[in-house]
Length: 73
Image 1 (cartoon, rainbow, N blue to C red):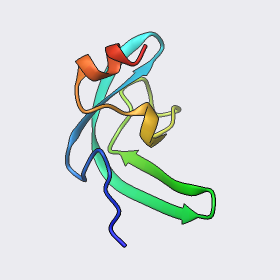
Image 2 (image 1 turned 45 degrees about the vertical axis):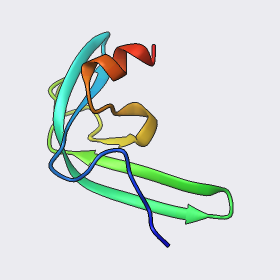
Image 3 (image 1 turned 180 degrees about the vertical axis):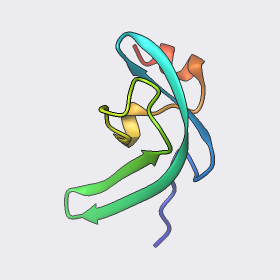
């Protein structure tokens, strides 16, 4: 089985928090395959919104470019 993710470890990623586009670097990737399908979670190095906010995101919450993020809205 081959699992492909939209981002790789070390990639810069963009996400939306507090109505702002923020960025970080992918630190780790967790993939879980069940009868319901594939679930991919990404851990980022730091969340510039603050240390109290999550550093774990689902695949649909992170984007490779700001443009991709804005198109998703």
